[in-house]
Structure formats: structure tokens, C-alpha cells
Amino acid sequence: MRGPDAYPTVSGVAAAARVLTRRHPDLCRMRLAGESRAGRPLWLLSVGHGSRNVLVVAGPHPDEQAGGATALWLAEHAVADRQRQADADLTWHFLLCLDPDGTVLNETGPAGPRPPAVHYRHTYRPAAAEQPEWAGSFRVPGDELPETHALLAVIDELRPFLQCTLHGTDVGGSWVQLTADVPGLAEPFGKYAAELDIPLQTGTYDALYWTGSGPGVFVQPAAGKPERFASEPENAAGSTWGRPHRYGGLTALVEVPMWATRRVCDQDPHPSPAQAVTALAARLRKDGAAASSALDRAWRLLSPAAAGSALLRGVEQAAGAFAGLADDYENLADDSPVQLTMAHIAALDIAARRIPLRASGMLLRLLDEERNGEGDPSGDHGRLRGRLERRIDAGARDLLATTDAHWVPVGDQVELQARTVLATVDRLT
Image (tube, rainbow, N blue to C red):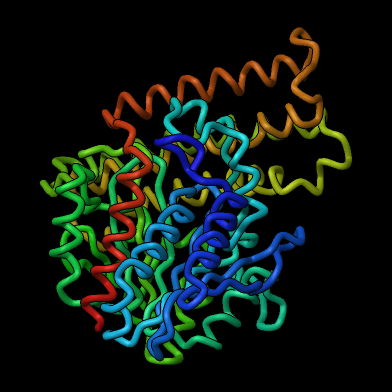
């Protein structure tokens, strides 16, 4: 890791895995599972010789950086607890980073504690069709991203009874999403979160339509039932999450926060949810207009080469999402799938604030890359850049003040994620 409270780099995780393999050649092995779109290696580390396989996927979203450290934590645990793993007939497999290209783009910022404004200045969030887990929702079989193809091939080879994908959220709490229920998981998950003083997110934007299986644990709806907002085209059925079901397995997504807020665990009913979501929708429309205006101005300043930039595609998706998401929020005022609690409104508020921050941050990065961080401050480039910086500073400050959030040490993020994975395996074995 880069320091005592820092996320490891993609190359650092791979290097640590190689060291573990050299130290324990009888138990550990490492191989290439594929290559990214830019030719970076997708490394698979395996620990153990059992016939029952657990697959852990780190780095599915490049701005969620705790997963690499969690994979190493779990691999070292499997080595240290080798007899128990052998008795359970287990082999652990760790795909050390599913999206190394995107993760490297996020490594430009500080590796550990940072103000939220600095985080959003360095963030990169790919368009959904370029996220390896979600890309299958947009592509026909046989036309997968190389990262998606590699992951599906690993699942088909290993036939894991459990796939765990390691996710994170910038501001919020911790929660688990399951493609099939794991009875009893909520108890140890809640215990571990309490010990680390990380709130359980009982109301989520991501799992609003999913069924609760205990505090902070959500199960995918039955086939044919809504699972996401209507404006969001990606779906779990088209993702890599469902692949283990072909072999009698399931997928667990474990989310941990960078900044934690207790507002997302307040299960009291909101006193006026319709008014609250309508107000959030109005703010989304306002922020969407500002994002579209900034993108239009940027187009006149960017070179033709920028048209192929992944950063620009990320901005375009974010800017195009505001109107549909505002409609979704307004629809909640009339027809919500659940009784909206204080936690739900807090989560919806955080999501509405996060999208313009991501869009502004990626656009600012793009402008800086075009001019190498320079430009006439009195010209169009400088004026747009200054406006984006002010928007990020103000938005991040309001987000932190509204949620009263605090930084969660990387070690705590990793420990909660790892212990939750272990608890899921225990419940299934």
C-alpha cells in the first residue's frame, strides 16, 4: 500500500500477489486470465486445492478502490488458515482487478484520506456500456468487452458456488446485494460493521427495488420485477452477476463507504417523502442543465482527438442521465416500491449530488489534459475551468455538510469487506 491509510495501486496489488505466490508455491499460483482493452493484464490468483471454488472480483468499478487490498487480505487469510480451507474443500480465486485501465485513471489522485473535492477532481467513472460487469446489458453475446469475456470464461471454468464482487461508495454506508438469499448473513455483517463503526445502509439508491433480507442486506427481485429505475438501461440479468447461477452458485456484492454517514441507516418513515423527492428532481434538472451547458462549451475548446476519450464518454453519459433520473424521482412521489424512510431520502439525495460532481470532475480533467493544466485564465478555457472548480468545491462542501460524513480508514473499509465475504462463505458452506 501507499502509506498506512492508502489504497494500493493496480501494479502494487499484482506485485504483492506474486510475492505471496513465491512464498507459498505449494498453495498459491497466479496466471493471466485475459487482457484489458488497453492490453493490461488481468491477473487471477488462486489459493488452495479444494474442489469447491470461491471467486472474488476486485476493481469492477475503477473509482471504487478498496477491492484490491481486500483481495490481498483474503488471500493472506486463506494461506494462514490453510487447514480450515482444506477441511472445507475450498479453493479461493481472486481476479485482482477487473478494470485496470479505468483504475489507473483513478490513481492520479491521493491514495488515502483526501477532501471530497479533491476526490471528485481525480475521479473517473466509465459510461455503463464500458463497465465490464454491466456491459452485457448493452452488447450481444460474443461481442463482450475483453474484460467481460475474461470474467465469464473464468466463471465457466471454475463454476464457483459463490462470486463476490468488491464495490464501494463515495458517501454513505455499507450494504450487501445478493442474487439469491443467504439466510443469516445480516447478523454477522451487522456485527462486523458495528465493531468498525461503519453504518449499515438500510435505504439505498442502488437497491431500492430489491428485497430486504435483514438490515443492509438486499436480494435481487424475481425475474420480471423491476430492479432499477426506468431510465437506467443496465440490468442484473445482462450482467456478469447472474453467470454463477448456471452452475448452482450466486453472486454477492459487498459495498463499503469512503465517507460514512449515519443518515443512511435511519429507518424512521420520512414525514413528507413526495415533497422531498420532488425537490430532489428539481435540483437534478437544474444541475443537468448546468452540466449540459458546460459540456457544450467544452466541445468548442477540445481537440478532435478528445472525441475518443473515455473521460468524455463518461461525462456525456452523466450529463445525459439527469432528465431521466429526475423523472424517476418524481415517479417515486406517486408510486414508490417501498415506504420511503429517512435513509432512503438521504441515499437519493447523495446520488443526486454525486452525479454532477462526477461530471464536473471528469470534464475538468479532460480540459486539463488538453492544455496540460495550462491555459489563459481570462480566456474561454480558463473561465470554464474556473467555473467547474467552483462547482466542485461548492458541491463537495455541501455534500459533506448535508450528510455530516467522515472518512473511513482504508483498513476499516477493507476489513469490513473481507469479513463480510468470509461470513458469506461460512453461511454457504
